[in-house]
Length: 379
Image (cartoon, rainbow, N blue to C red; front, side, top):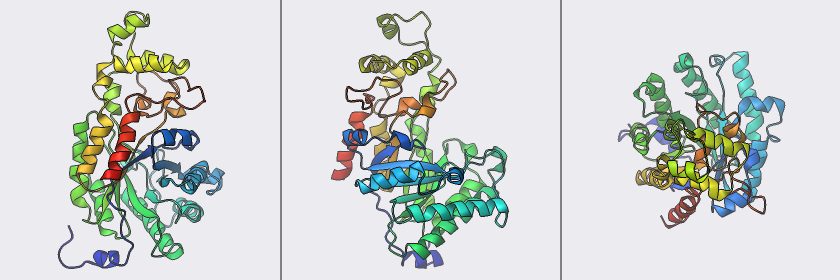
């Protein structure tokens, strides 16, 4: 931790713009599905922030400025929204490249194409999406750290040289996953947090608590917060109870629901969801399925409760919650597919559209989402 004497990092921090305030905002997360941004949805939810991630290899087949993620965020910014862009480096098939290699130079070239399009324009740039998932398990060592530290330093240097000391784009490192499992706290994650703490240009770290219970979010906070400088904050650009939903996919549907809709004996929850994907339900039908399912209905306060835990730390800058069912959530749905679509505030994959063609909302999340906007303004 920082001592009383000013370290080089602290001296450098003194000449940087003030870090992003711990405002405890809640925004809309679209992951890679920039095509799903509909301002009617954002207006219905009173959302002010939106977040998208960009897989960096996609820059090779499209200009960075012309990529849908970039265009969508810049359009949203022009409309008055606050914006977060996360940079995703998928390394599922190879180890992280070393500095000086051709593969490393290619990654730097991608950054050099992207940064002029977004630096000074998006509010937050997150360096990394989910490094400890978007890589092979055997490669999650210090090579991972060296790669992401190199990317971060390049972004930091570019911001300083081209955007100046008052650059409005804030920088975070992202994101850490499943810290509720002790096996995921390693020498590499310790170095990750040490780098965040020791680098004055970074405002903090992003976490992605996708969990089996709300209690499992506490280890994330217990690990991250003591390893941040006092002036740093955290993001939670993804969070959910998706592992709780998944535990119940093979269970029989609620008897009352099965009887009401004439389902065959032994019908399972995942089968109802797949039926809704194949032919979207009326809103009352979908809501009835979830309301009659104790595993869902008893957790409908999750978003509000999780946001309270985040805000109680006094260190949350922005959290963004899964906003809309995307195409990747509903394709080839079966008993073992992770049911991300149950998280979404808007449910176009499983509920018929509204008369005006806009997406219908999941009853469990929309009111909480709106209420949390008002609460953030009061706080």
